[in-house]
Every structure is written in structure tokens, then in C-alpha cells.
Length: 200
Image (cartoon, rainbow, N blue to C red):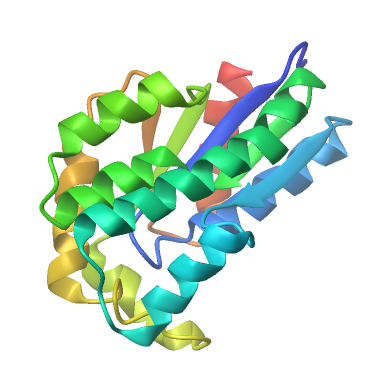
């Protein structure tokens, strides 16, 4: 595997899909091969990202349009401060969620997801690869409950997660690859690494 320029790989999925674990496994595998990797996430720890996390944990929803505005503002800073500089430096950026999450999540809130996709692709760097780790919404929420930690009741609701999964299933993006999230973390990692190895 030889990387000659910066690459952007986004991990996407419903809550509890295992994407965060898979991102870390891929980062370790790439670093073991001497590749310079940057790991990051959305929402970020910046001002807008903190506001999103506080809202998610409060259980009090805001209007879908406001929610989308917060995510877009957070993403704009994320791209300007982290993603674009890393790509310019020739690094491989692995991000835990990117704009396809806004397409799916705010689309599931009732906003036109096709419009969110079009505006996102026009405004932000396209990922070289977006990996959608697919598990059923039911299985995902079982994992969320099992791992504990801070609950995010605004998003962690089965009917909503089913709607998110429906949007993810409909996405037509040529850079999106779907990977089964069933099986052990190591089994899922092997599937993902084969795809990344072929793409990079």
C-alpha cells in the first residue's frame, strides 16, 4: 500500500454500528505500515460541536433546520482547521462521521436529504472513501446500551435510528462502500482493510 497524496476516509453508520472502533483499528493498521494518519471526529470539540453534544444529551430537540445549521458550522471549522491542512500535508485523514451523517440524520428529521447531500458535496471536500458500517438499528442500540457512557436521547431512539438507516440505504454516492458490521471487530476490520488497501 502506497499513499502519494492526502486521502480522506469517513466512517459512517447508525449509532452503535462499531464505526469508531473500526476507525481506530484501521488507523493502527495504516500506522503500522508507515502511513501518516490523522484521526478526528464530528461533532468536534469546538464551540459548535460542544453545543450539539449538549443538545443531544439534554433530550431537548431543536428545530431540524437549526440542528443542521449547527452541524454545518461545526463541519466548516473542522475542514478549515483539521481536514484541509492534513490533506495538504499528504496525510491520511480518518474521520468518525462526516457530512453523510448530516444527510442521514437531518434527513431522518424530515429535511430533504437530497438537498443536504448536494449542498454538502458542493461545500466540503469529497471523501476518497466513505465506509458505511451496516448493522440493524436494533443491534446498534443494543450495543449503545451495553457499552454505557453518556446517553444521547435526542438521537438514540429506535424509530429515529430506523429512519436514519433508510436514508443511509438510499445514498447513491460513488465513493460510499457498505460493509457488514456483523461479526467480531477483527472480522469487520479485515473486510474494511481489504477495501482500503484496494482503494489507496
